[in-house]
Image 1 (tube, rainbow, N blue to C red):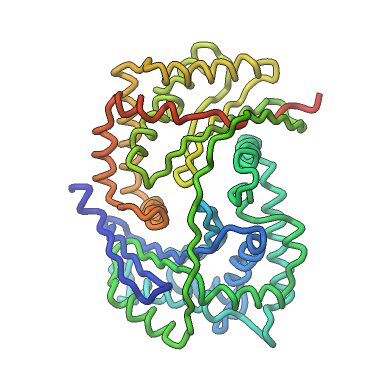
Image 2 (image 1 turned 60 degrees about the vertical axis):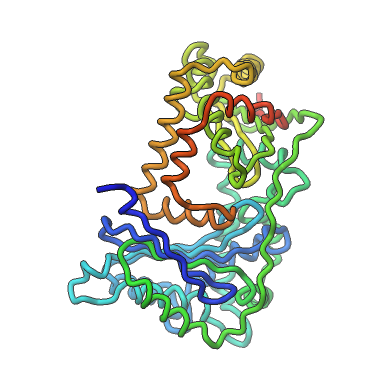
Length: 428
């Protein structure tokens, strides 16, 4: 079957705040429903949004406890429901993700997707409230959940080093915030001010509803319109994501923790995000540099010189940042750093073989093809494109990648400029 036949995106505008997106992927036996509330990423509400995402999932007007919600999900043949927050550029997104079997496999022809969508709408728009307040026990519990998540950020040392590097690259920019905010901000939340925050944002957020799989989108549309018809929505304020600009000075930051392996993270600015025409060339350049086993970092820093246990690079499509991260012996810091920069300079000098070029493109194409095999990958790809204001046509994007030339790569690589060198070292 042609890949294009597996992916059809249809969008219906419910009102100025809510859009319904249907991604037809009919080879799956399940349908995935996602609701995404788009908020400006800010220190004033990041922690409140994080606690709110878990609080809403804990009960609604019809199902007042987590136990009742779980029983309802079991009645939908083991459906699942998750919630949380994530960062997408200068947006903080409160999300709800649910999954059930496709209606065509329902034993008694039940409309399971509609029932799951109704549950999500009740959780989001008709929460469990008493006297203009959420339940204190629930809020206290979910505050602890968020604080535990903040504390756990340090457990994965590779991710922690990249997070710390990001904080330094994005210093004085909202993107330096974690998606959970801070523990101090969480501790200031109570059941009353959280509900007041909910009231302020629920009717003024941009909301994207996704149904992914094989469903009747018109029925979903009618259901949503009927459910929200009495809600007085207000104009939403959509933040404009700012690309991180290059800095005159390179920051060198070292933290010391009780670790046995050093973590090197280097942040570069590129001045290019995924909405720009040069982005496919930057993606290919990044692939040549460090995104895979075919790359310069892997084959030289890791394999040839044995300076790292792992070494790779990645792009932030919203903020125009390129990150290198490597796991190294503490004593190899200087050598690993110098060789990383040497490989970047080789790229900038045009030392690109035909094999590197073709392998890099193939790796990108293969990665994009995996989206057709994962409903959530496809959903997140489409959501990113909506936030960036670009086409979500994967086949077109693949063609753009294949059309990138060495001249295109050489045009964008001078924009890659070193910003921050972060090293997570041992205490001794």
